Length: 142
Image 1: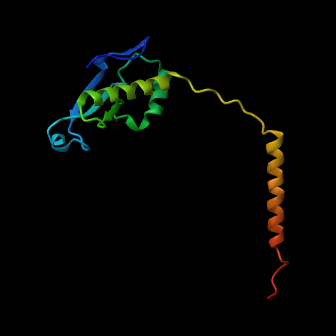
Image 2 (image 1 turned 90 degrees about the vertical axis):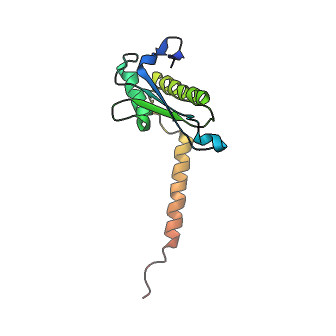
Image 3 (image 1 turned 180 degrees about the vertical axis):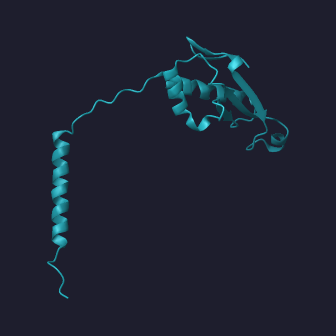
């Protein structure tokens, strides 16, 4: 396994990665029972010193369903019929996750509702009130 280049300043070393292969389901005909085309790629996040803690925390949130109990990130691919394409797919998944975690989320600036939206809300509220008051016949006859 080679190093994974996320961008020009960030390279995940191959020593932190573990690749395994297995038989996958799906298309392939008789060949599917003979070839290990499913790829599982694990990255030892708990051992890496590559990313700052804030980025690691964001990565753990983004990839919550892909984290293992030991703190490793695991991605799998079995969409293609050959190992190399599935391996490329796993590498791309890790690259996209890391790139997404590198960008800090924008802080939300609280805004006020526009005058038009406020007016429409009040008009709708008055309309609903009128509809409900029209339903009232004045009590029971009974």
